[in-house]
Every structure is written in structure tokens, then in C-alpha cells.
Image (tube, rainbow, N blue to C red):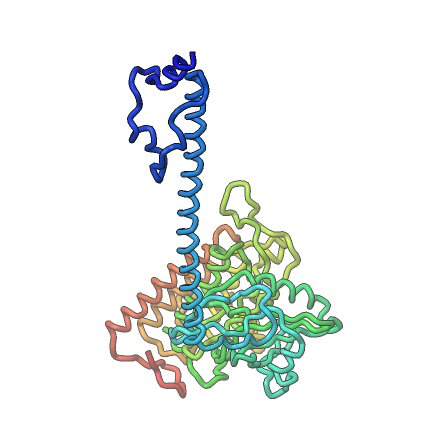
Length: 455
């Protein structure tokens, strides 16, 4: 009996042949043989089960050794990579100089945190390292030398303006608001200016650097534009004469700035105070629009169906530039800025103020007087007497006045949009330059002036 059991144990498998040795142990990574290839029980199934158990055991051991080997390899590679990175970092620390310490308070908004910007001459410059949008009183006093009268550069409805220098050397204009007892609306104007200027950035708009609000003090810090206002140049206060071509360039700069406010800013903005004293000139006589104390966010401005087309608000602005329809209905639209821009075009052409209080009654309102002269066929009389009367200037003047009167239409739907004004001004400037190129001999004005004619 024992012999039969022993023979049964040594019998081949149920498939009829014995599994070759190299196939039975192919799963083992070391191809190690089992402890015993014979069963110890009297049943073939028990022997098969035991063999399976051995195979499972050795398979597990093989998988464990394989994973251990790969983990060790990965860990070694990671360790070598970390050592290499640490060595590289150490070399960089040795080669690179330390960064300069930040001056001022940490930036609260990072308005101009980019890598650089182009100044008026077109050169690439680094951003100012002083990027704080919220200034302290100590910083303002240090920048303006305690509001020194020698640094005062202007006075407006909002308050006094001082020239200042930030710790990094950036020259700025510091606008100090009037006290509440002098201007009860100072808080509204201050918050409006900060809110609007923080949203916008354009080469024809003054750059916003920050603000300060402490106790009764309200300060707005903006870009310093060194060459005064357009009104000062038209009054010939700055010693530089604006020829007709330069005046067209200024008109185009202002039109671009207002177009940006109406159409391309994050939210449509209505300036509400477009006038010559709010237009600053750079050294190269490029225009920058300033003073956003009266500015308001628009309400869709009619760009889509169902959107609000106006904002009902208290009338604000400057006499002579105010849209009469807005004055009558208190409904503010982007066409209110277009009306003010039309008045500005007449001002550029004639150099007269919108309201000339010292002139006789029929010439006191410059826009009405210019319209009468234009309709009567004497548009050349509107031209600034200090400008040369050339065919190019007279033709460009007629085109400019025609655009100005369209902008000053009594009904806002009849006024062009600011982007249309831009295109019209480009055409006027091209016509003026083409006629100048065709007539190279300058024709002096019949009126005696002390200035040389220049192109």
C-alpha cells in the first residue's frame, strides 16, 4: 500500500507529461530550485497544492527583491540629483550679488510691478522699486520737503499740487486736497479719482502711483509731467509756441485717451471735465489727460441691447465745456465728453478761452462766435492770430471746425463717437501735412506777430 502511494506520488501530472524543469521555475528571479519536488502526502491534489504554495512563496520573495532593488536605484538617483541641485544653488549664491532691499512699505496692489516700461523718449527703463500704492504721511512729507512752497507747482479745484521725489528717485506730482471746511465734497472727489485711476493705464493719461488717507489729509500721487498745461501754452506763458501741426497732434493724443476711457478700459469711464487746463504736456509736447475727480463709471453706454445708455447724476464740470443736454436732464453719457472735446478743438484753433469775459457780448462765448464766423464764410478769422495763414492751415482749420461743431451738436445722438473723432483728426492732419509738402514756401500771416513762422 505504501508502495502504491509512493508510486502515485511520483506519477506524471494529469496532463500526461511532466513539466520541464526550466518552465516550472521560470518565475524565480534566481531560478532557485524548491526545497523538495516530491509531495509528503498520499494524494496528488495535496502535492499539487503544496507545490503551488511553494511557488507563491518564492514568487512573493522574487517580487520583494525586485521592488527593493528598483527602490534602492531610485533613491540613489534622487539623492544624486539633490546633491547636484544643492551644489548648483551654492554656486549661484556665490556668483549673484544680493538683491537691493525694498524701500517704502510693501505693495498693497502692485499696480506697476512689471519688468519695465518705456519713457517719453522710447527707452526701456526699469520699473520704480518703490511700488507701494498706499503711502504714509512720513513718506509724503519727506517727498515734498514738508510741503515746501518752493515745490508748489499748481493750484486747482481739488487742492494744491506739489512736486515730489520718492525714495527711489522717481519724480511725482503730489496732489493735496483741500480741507473739508473748504470743500465739503473732497472725500467724494478723492475716492472717485483713486477708484478710476487704479483701473486705467494709457500713454496719454497721467500714471497713478498711489494715495494717502490719514485724518483730514487726502493725498493723490501721480506722474509728474514737466511742461505745464495746454492752457498755459495757448496763453503763451511757457515761452514755447504751439504751431498748428503740434496742436493737431495734441488733439489726436487727447482723442486717443478719451477713446480708451470710453471703449477699452476695464469698465467704460466718463471723464466729465475735458478742458485745456486738465491736459498736461511733456517735454516733447505730447499730451496727457489728468484730473479724474469728476470722473464716473459709465453704464454700458449703449453698446448692447437692453443696456443702460446713461447715468443719472448731479451735474459737474466746468462752465463753457458742459454739455447743455446733460445740464438740462442730468443724464450723463459718453457724448458729454464728446461735447467738451468739441469745445477744446475750437480752443486749440483760436487760442481763446471758452468764455471770454473781457470781450464784447457777441464774442464772449467762443463756440457761438466761432460758429457764426464759420457759417458766414469767415472761418479764417477764428484762427489764432499768432499762427501763419497758409493754405494748409486754412484748409485744416475748416475741417477742424466742422468736426468741432459736429461734436457740439445740441442732441447727443447727433454727435460722433470718440473713435470717429480720432479717424477724422487723422484725415485732417494728413491733409495739412500733404499741403505743406506741396507748398514749401511759407506764407506769413497778414497780422504782425513777434514769432517766427515754423512748420
